Image 1 (cartoon, rainbow, N blue to C red):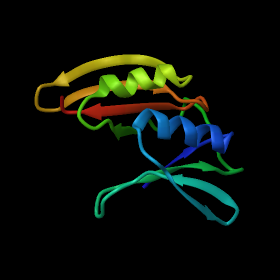
Image 2 (image 1 turned 90 degrees about the horizontal axis):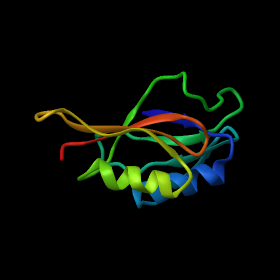
Image 3 (image 1 turned 30 degrees about the vertical axis):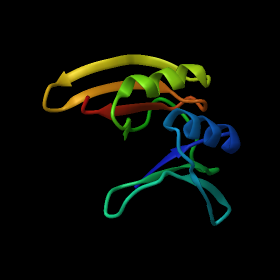
Length: 116
């Protein structure tokens, strides 16, 4: 499980739904808004979360989200939706695949990974 801190919940949900071409499931816990990424158990998932104790930023842990078949279309949608790509599609190794890194709508550094 992971939580990506956000300042503007609606903006962040729109951003992530747009770049991954999916819908996040709305949830709330102890007054904290959560946009939960789709997942299949027992695989990991997480959420964008608006929580007073955590602020968005680039200094935290860098997580890599599943980009599906290819990193490039996700990075293209990052640019089209107001994010900033800081590492274009890059091959790590043939058996590991490709990564890319971007700054989201809230200022968080986030990575994406795909095998192709």
